[in-house]
Length: 123
Image (cartoon, rainbow, N blue to C red; front, side, top):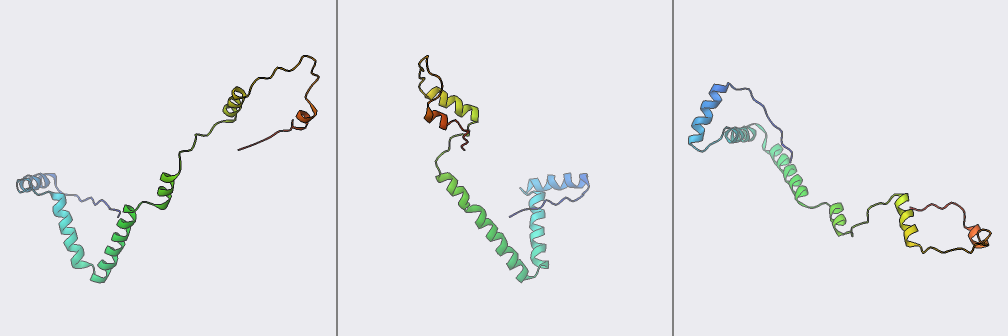
């Protein structure tokens, strides 16, 4: 349920005196104002409208309390590895691949290697 903040102008001296005497009775101005608004709401707003509004509030509160299906699915998924840049992937592949010394007389790539020299892209 969303709330709206109300601002009311009231003389500072009166408010200070009100808070002083309410404090002696363990009361707060804010709670008294809320109680007065609730009583005014019940007095002014027709019963069938209040029933509708309260059902909407209850529905919102139920939805807020129940975890969202997406949140549940995310909790059940295993943790994914962080994304790597292309350079990081290439460096990892280069360090993982064994270094093969080619013979000095090797004129170039073999026929099979020559066929695989095209550009590849993966995600």
